[in-house]
Image (cartoon, rainbow, N blue to C red; front, side, top):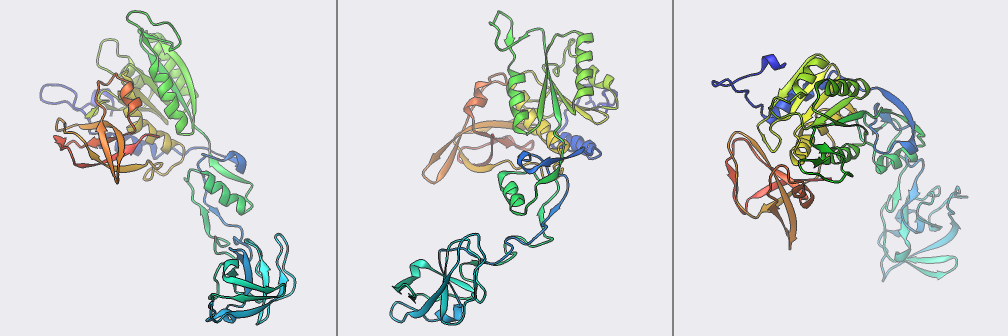
Length: 423
């Protein structure tokens, strides 16, 4: 939808788009974009997105192993064993770590075995050391019987040859790297990291390190947004602060579009004579503006556009509004461009909490309410952190947020709400 195709109400005003519709419109456009791939070494793969299914090249473990310190036995030799009626077994060998066991176990005999030791031929279970009593160096009493397979991990019990180990589109954590290391996989194919360009706009914006002067505002957004982008595991390219000058602003946005895979600018998304964001997106190419204005508080004036394969977001200048829009629109776009499936964006922790005051809302918009969480006995309590959209301290005080849906006029005290936790 371009600027000339906007839907207007009976009074000629631009109608706001529902958040869910805006997200769907954006992600639908991103389906056609296939991120490039590259091969990396396993030690460099933490946080990367797998670009291909990885199947197991072998059984893991590759042989039967003990999961306890104790004695490898033929399980039927221990049936019915108890403190009052122990089973007696001869110690005829010992398993050493990293070595193949010598010989085999026969009925009435056992081998000493450590945790992780290879199960000797003939054995089908391990009696824990705690369930034995030594008679002498060559004989033990077993005071608790076991069944076949007790305290043993069988060949392929972890993962079998040919099984799917890691699906394409999976963000690789330390756990996945451990699995791949166990399978001897030294390198793998991942999607290339995308680069996100940030442009801060406004004659009133100054570097956050500069002394403050009347009428000036320190550049909060570039620092805060860079932090959120880094949390997504992608690279940030900061194009600095750009004055409200048409030629400078347009050339900077064009440069960012040409050099990065996703562009954010903040401060130029509200209605006004000096608002150049909409014009810039339309100049960059098709399809142009997808959304301008959503039924959201805070964050209503966000602009979402697309220049061929590069999403462009005009975020509100107020830091809280900008960061809310990042969570709802930019983060899913980064996830999609990074190779994650569109129907399963990266996991965000959600907890249930009891709301500790009434919150009113205007029907027809999605309200994002920031909360502090307090654990009281077995109940999690949610205290709303209220403040204007420019009050960055409200975000610093909050551990998460919940939504008041468009069809609701508020939430009552004592109701349970689903709180999305900030990272």
